[in-house]
Length: 288
Image 1 (cartoon, rainbow, N blue to C red):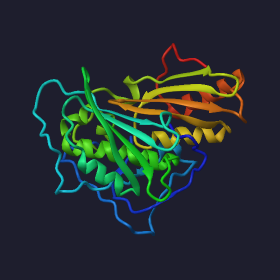
Image 2: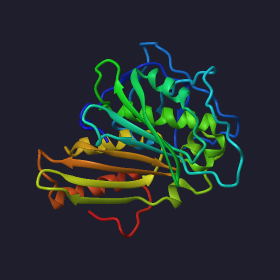
Image 3: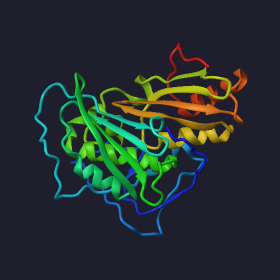
Image 4: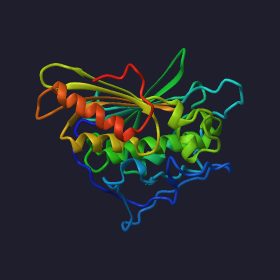
């Protein structure tokens, strides 16, 4: 995911009263819309001490009521699995985001507007079709700098903004997403804390860096927590990719320790730290 994710500050902004927590009760009422304003007194901040137990007060801009998606969902028994990919590897100067949801995605104008409300320049890079559906890719940079997004909290806000808009226009996807448990209208049938296992692998990727692969149950704030865990043990993230795929979050991170690849004891420390803080069932093939 991010090229440089060392900054772990608070993003100034205004956030809704939506509190997305893995422990909160599941709402059965229609999905609320969320707004993003400009009150400088409120901030998005995660306490390092509360890590996985915090209630994430997310910033999710409200989609415009005048720019509706250009395709209306037709109810079928086969609901595609939503996928959101945040790619920090493909370009040195921009963050790429790819959204896939079968053939149900429209023009995504509201999603683009909502991301622009986060202070971002958003350009639709391309759209292509294959057997898995329509893939829409965006190029994203910070409006203030013209450079790619490196702050993990802002990257997480981008991810949640996209998923929020997906849930708004396609409520049938709620049971397909781990976020459906947090703020959707229908929770997944799988029990996220029980049925979704965690897999962690660390590989050598040359003399100067290692490749960390993490697969675990998705939830709001996960990306921020992962980066905080890395920071706690002085592991630097060079680049990578973070995928939201239905109930799963899949991250591939190029990491190093003081400019070198991680030696085996440090790989063990990193894997154990992730397992402890993620607190998920672990499969037998997990390794370090």
